[in-house]
Image 1 (spheres, rainbow, N blue to C red):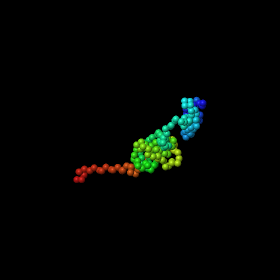
Image 2: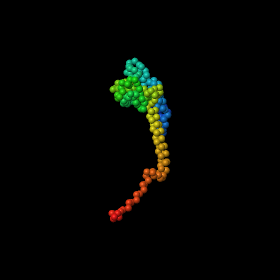
Image 3: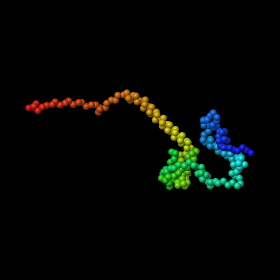
Image 4: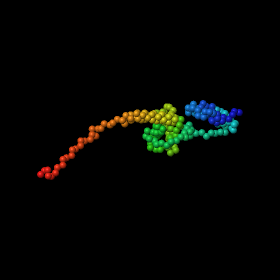
Length: 215
């Protein structure tokens, strides 16, 4: 009888590059998130499901397809995807679609819900598409036209925003440094008075006369 498959921590992660070891509590990351996701999926389908379990005396795969077991499955793949999309955010439907994470999602079915509050659900690993709900009812799938044929993760957007903020911060710091270099010259320079600022000539006092002088 084969050994029990164990857990992801003991059977999988310890075999992957970059895992924590004695003397190296903080190793440098080696795998990308996509590579880690692929490794976990391979472990579940190829190792865990095909290894005999001590309690059921069978492999999880054979127990799933065996007689006397009727798994409860969603009716469609769309329903299964909705169960997996646990991340939800509230948004307002605009005339040009739903705005989320700096992207714009469109669908012809959204035209009937302009100015209405909706809930969007999405997969952080690929946010080129979202599911839109109105009053707990599924409306449609909306896509971002600019990235419809590619995969864009939430981490990609956050990284792009961070890079843009660093770029703007660097430009501001450069301009501050240029101004600071010229401040001593500006402080030492004597301002030239404007023509309007010249003091007007002083008026001479009039000679006082007395009434007797005219007689």
